[in-house]
Length: 230
Image 1 (cartoon, rainbow, N blue to C red):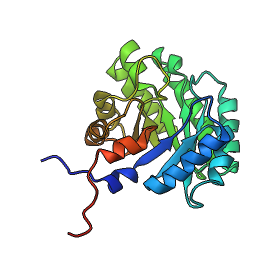
Image 2 (image 1 turned 90 degrees about the vertical axis):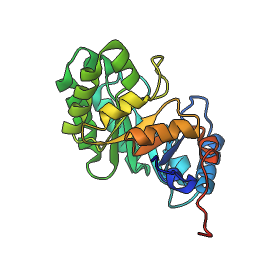
Image 3 (image 1 turned 45 degrees about the horizontal axis):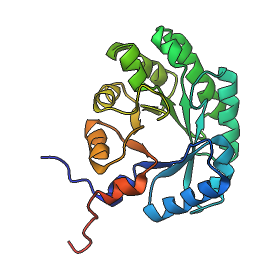
Image 4 (image 1 turned 135 degrees about the vertical axis):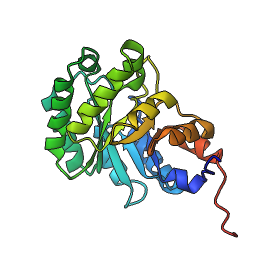
């Protein structure tokens, strides 16, 4: 029988996300305030907005910053410095984008070195989530490419592997991608195109332990609340 997911439980697995390039400081402050009202796990923002998110909403709110976003086509040293500065500004988690092209040409040593550079820069000060663009790897490569990419990230010290930026034309999270990624070892963050409660439940059932959502309120409102009278 399917697990009955409750609104409050799922909220604690959500990174409430705003990564639009046109986002203003006021938008990020509003995101942080909404995060506090929804009871989510973290807010996920661009590195430039980490300090804004930290001083908005709840003082205890965890902030996640993206790195090498959204293309991943940045020098590893730049990704590492961007991550280090974001942590200095108060980010407790980093979501970095790999070089998808390196993965597609099966240069997994390059993928591993890229992740290692960021891991070394932040040490144990922040959780590291590695965005692999699973839809692109499955479309342009195959399931073994996705699995090998996730293994390289795990070997380099990733705490999570993450499906998508949400910006790639190949698409976002899929149940099959999450199922595959969950077999590798690190935890899995499903992100990209999760717009309904049913979408969220499908990802959790497939093995996701974190969800990246921009339409968080709509997803949570599709789930039943915990009945405190029981």
